[in-house]
Amino acid sequence: MEHFGDSARMADELLQEVTHGAKRATSELVAAFAADGDELPRIGSHWIACDSTGAPRIILRSTEFRIGTFSIADEAFAWDEGEDDRSLASWRIQHAKYWARTCAARGAV
Image (cartoon, rainbow, N blue to C red; front, side, top):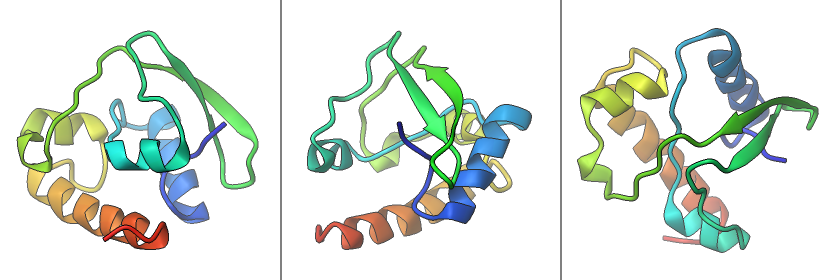
């Protein structure tokens, strides 16, 4: 079981966007899966998203999967992630900050 984000607040906010908002996509670094010893998602795979307390709230199924560099994310993907103002500019700023924090937290540079 997993949660969105790297804080309790973010976990609950993003879960709310999935269950009651516009969030229909998510992204993560391949290196994060490797660091956690997890396999990459596959189309048709499921995962349980928990809230900040660790309580399971929703089962998600992967319907599309792409591996690419940060620079290939496009406006449509940013819109589907449903975060902030849903623009690509905002997606890039917020995800660069998020991945810098999570990389630092696991000792990756």
